[in-house]
Image 1 (cartoon, one colour):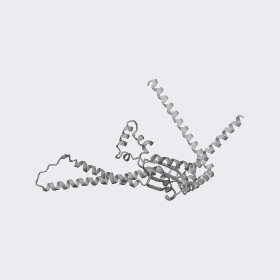
Image 2 (tube, one colour; image 1 turned 180 degrees about the vertical axis):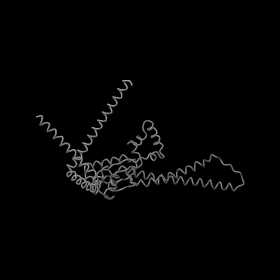
Image 3 (tube, helix red, strand yellow; image 1 turned 90 degrees about the vertical axis):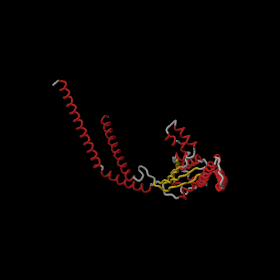
Image 4 (cartoon, rainbow, N blue to C red; image 1 turned 135 degrees about the vertical axis):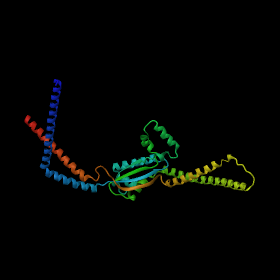
Length: 329
């Protein structure tokens, strides 16, 4: 057998033996570490038991008393009042953060202002509603999508504020009623002299449009009835009659269909025009869930024991270093 082959085999055997010895030392070190951990818990069993009991008890208490709730309201800002709505929500949230209970109670009308911990608003993404019957919005989305990610564009602040519906979330630390919290906030959001004037004009314009469309539909019906009567009379006659294709009868019927659709749309829109910020739905006292919310009875004992372990390691480290320093001196 060549000498090189023997050398390679010897090297492999040395490597394997070294790996085996290292693995053995690691296993021994792990066993020693495990033994020290068991010894630590046995030595400090009383302290750890007390921390465990205290943590579980305190966790149960906090889980029961420190509850948080979300109040969700879906609203539609009318008359291009979206920016106004967002500025009002920002004002409310700033007053809540500052703890300005006088403003919240006297100006807004909250019965229990201290229970309100925050208020936020986010648009409800509905791109189909955004472009429905709005060619300019569809073309805008197409144009913006050519230069960037369509998802980012749809979620962009400037785009999302133009969505129809928005969700307001009010955070409280106790159960509330609609009368004590929701109604005062909605009344506060609808207090605007400018938008009240716009609301009145929009309402009058919608009523005027309804009356005009009704008049035009009646005129179209009269034309269609006249044409129908004329056709019946001529059918009774034995004379051959030719009709001009340029009567534009189809266009007249199509116009009537469009007007009827407009009437239906206006009547539906009038339902929501009674308020500047129209409330569509609400969900009250929904328990707020977080990573540790409701699980403090499990988290607190773990944190207390972990803190005790770190404290013990710190004390041991400090004593060892202090002893070394004393020996060196």
